[in-house]
Image (cartoon, rainbow, N blue to C red; front, side, top):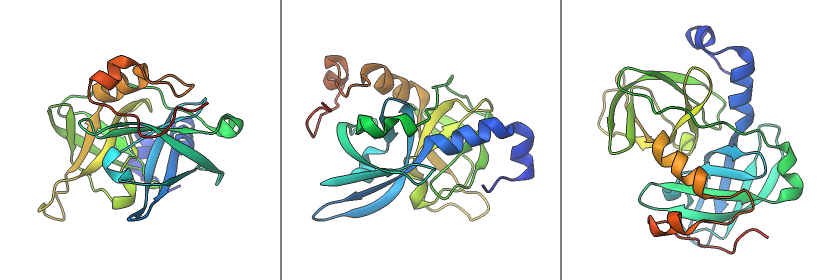
Length: 212
């Protein structure tokens, strides 16, 4: 694991290991697209959260855990407005998953940490919160999209969705979906893969069959 000394002072080893275990790699493929990005387990029974725009129009999704277990997954919900997607892995393999608990939305000046599939933990300060989106001063790789943003206790407070282009190399700015939108999606998506009418009415759409 790649962890800086400054980060080690804020996150204890057990918290760091838990974040690493809850972060997954997602490989998605279809007729017109093939992509690799990140995701985070939000329910140990088999729910994984990631970025909706990263998925695109895909036919097959594989979730690979930090222990290199490859799990077949189904997309059960896409919320284009919030840029969030929920995947469900097959229950027979879900026991291998560890989940992150949602945290309190951070405000400007708060220090947060992000992790992507490259297993490199980074930290930065929240510059601004606008419309439920966090602007965080730290770099982001394309493979980090969909990865978790956590607070000092390891609670999920954001999901990496991209970066602001045109920034100087020494002043990168990452963008993340905030905790409130994430909390709504988690609360309204049941572990068995069923989605409530409340979420559907909020603009979400199921694209494949519910997990049986």
